[in-house]
Image (cartoon, rainbow, N blue to C red; front, side, top):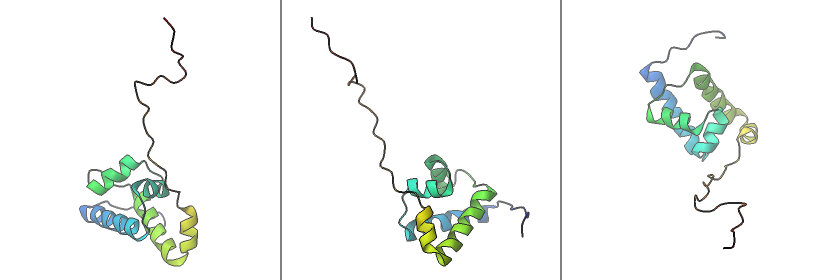
Length: 104
């Protein structure tokens, strides 16, 4: 079915969300790892899950391919899955890095 167009309907979006959450649960993926695997920002992944944004056809097909890969070659999928990255802490606004205090 190469070259076929995918029409995103509410049913497609619901199925995508269901499949995405199921895969995240099965593979114990954090939002960061799932977003990395799909090649999208975490913000986009969260919008998909919340139903506030529709995935494009490429994302829908990629999720299907990842599901097939999970079934047929789980070691390959594991190798493709990015490692979990810790949240980046914002620097304290009151700390001035590299600034030497002056003596009065």
